[in-house]
Amino acid sequence: MSVTLCLETLDQTVYEEMLSHTALGVDELAAKLDVEPDRIRDCLDRLFALQLVQASFEAPSRFTVVDPVLGMKRLLEQQHEELVRSHRQAAGSQQALIRILAGAGGGAQQADGVERLAGLDSVQGRLERLALEAGDEILTFMPGGPQSPASLEAAVRNDALVLQRGVAIRTIGLDSVRGDAATLRYTRALVGQGGEFRTAAALPTRMVVVDRTYALVPIDPADSRKGALFLSAPGMIAPLLALFEREWGAAVPLGSDPSDASYVPSEQERSLLALLAQGHTDESAAGQLHISARTARRIMAALIERLGARSRFEAGLRAARLGWV
Image (cartoon, rainbow, N blue to C red; front, side, top):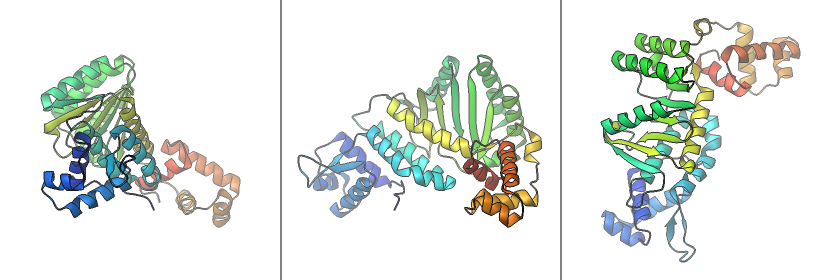
């Protein structure tokens, strides 16, 4: 049975206390946090299931906290199959994962490669510097829905300067921006200058990754005004890159070719997609549709190309998002 990553507030508080005070036991944690010992035990059980704490080698009856970076790697492995099975469920898990990364820098003993940036001005200043210094690629989650026209106009100017230097830009927004005229103008300008923009039904919290080396994530995903964490440790960047690539693979391009957005698949194409989604092979699906297996493969290859997918699985996700199946 898979473990869903979902830390409650008390779980995270206990985890942070154990990071800062490694010698605390159940009774000491209960006294410090002013809660019943049984609630601490429940928290430790959940943290143990998520492999964020483990039995102490020196005192097997006690728990010891797992290094945050190692814990993130373990959690990412645990969540891999669940992320693949459900894109929407993945987005929720990813948001919780980023919350834990934020928590890794919140205790008295901050992990290497974590810098706290307090307030929006500090965050904006760092973003501008990163954009100026970027040499390869900027990856962004934009989960806030439609942006203001003024901010989008500023983004067009900034993106143009970045793209002129040969830096790639890949951005994922929410599906809701498809109905916003200002965002559509922005995406057309971005794509026209060589950038890429896709949308997804759900996204984790805002995130920016630059040159696969640095990342910014909010300290508190529920309140971006509190500032952000600037991450540079490779062990923290790697899982964020993996999360972005999974979301990118399932997201639907926006603004690259208006004819694709208006394309209506034939009944034969819809039926083939539905049969393949049910687990049929090319041969069995062809038999159901009374066509040859070669024809079924040709139709599927054309659909994969039209959807801009890299695999049948990715094509199936995009087709479902577009309402084709």
